[in-house]
Structure formats: structure tokens, C-alpha cells
Length: 187
Image (cartoon, rainbow, N blue to C red; front, side, top):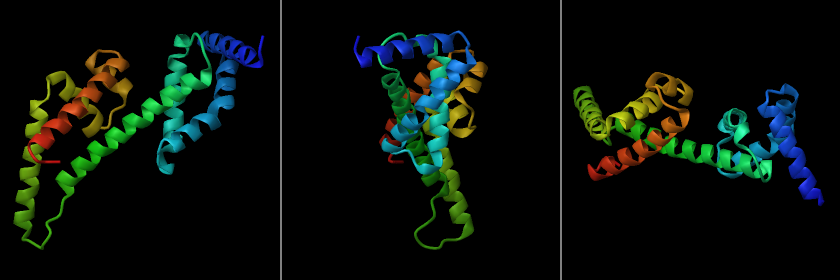
């Protein structure tokens, strides 16, 4: 047995214990992989202000799904979880920036407050129109996550679906929103 095979066997044993609820195994997995996950998040472009959040979220997802880990290197599995979370945050950041530019845009020249208010109301109406074109289930998840700031678990509970379904709907809602907004010249 090679050193790598021994490490994989040890990780699988630790993962099985963690899956069974062994708190010491969970702590050992966390402690031995914390630096790796944080480094991956940083290397994938996570801003320093979000590193702790991404690292914590990675372990929340990993511990929730630890029973799904059955083979291979644990670091590869954790890398994939981290990469997916970072990608989702980058997409969410782009959408939030689009919303900010819609609602927070300032006129290039000074105009009367009434004109600025009218422009803001018009932009909100355009964004509302784009949102209304999304399929109901996508719009529902998009609004709860992007506008209300609810977590995936909170949305899943409210909507009555799995967290994975929430993330899937959010992914497609963001794509649809961006395509519709581009079509209307909003992005």
C-alpha cells in the first residue's frame, strides 16, 4: 500500500465516522483542511472580506454531505465544493452590481431631484419587468436570495424543496435575468 493509498483510506475512515456524527472526526476534518480550503478560496479570487464566510460555508456544505464522500481524496472533494461556492458568489456579485447600477446610478450631470426620482422609478420598473418574465419558481428563489438575503436553507424551507433545487433554480434564474436584462439594454 502506498502512502497516498494509506492517506485515502484514513480519510475515508474519518469521513465515515464524521458521517455517523462523531464530533471528534468532524473537528479533525475541519482542522486538517481549514488552511487548504481558505487557500483555494483565496486563489479562486474570493475577496479577503469574504474568505471566512466562504471557508465556513464550504465546511457547512461538506459536513451536510459527508455521507456522499465515498472515494478519492478528500481534498479533491473539498476543492470542488469550494470552487462551486466561489463561482456562485462571483455570479451573485455580478447580479448585485447590476442591481446597484440600476438603482444607485447617478445622472452624469446634475439634474433636478424630480428627474432623478423619475429615472430611479423607471429603472425599478424595468427591473421589475425583467423579473416578471422569469418563471415563477426561478423568480421566487431569485427574489428571496438576491433581494431578501435569505440563505439556501431558509429558501428551501419556505419553498418546500431541497437546498440543491434552490441552488439550481437560482443558477438558472440568474442566467435568465442576465439574458433578459441584456436584451432590454439594461446591462
